[in-house]
Image (spheres, one colour):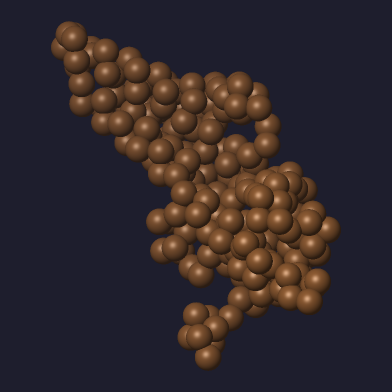
Length: 218
């Protein structure tokens, strides 16, 4: 690909290559973009300079809270775009597991073999994984650079801690530590965490400095 014009790299072409590299997955690292553009003959210094220029103009986002300093991604235009993107996939999965855990725990009898296995699986996830995972996302909206096993261990630890606190609190209520109140409270905590994580992500990902498509076309 010809990127030079009188021995000078054409800024518009490099900008478009960077944005195109991010549009397909929206999320990457600075080094990943540099490596990808090297295949098109763009030097690292040119790519780095252009990424910083795009960040100042609001076309890409850098140094997001709770993420690596090497994080780079394109902003979203609003809630609908975010919820339909791969960025929200982990929260959608958390919501699905939450619903399955709640439904199987409350509706499947303990003596209904072998369907009760679903209750054990999804009910167990509701107790030891789902609330903690959502809580971690609420605390660190863009945390993506710790080891998957570390993230899993942290989510399980927080889930167990939340379950213990919920049980301790319910012990002083008329319902006591029973199945239905425990599942409902854990569901409420998980839903609140998902909403907080979604709000924090969207608030950061919407870049008001990015021109609209209509102004770009002009």
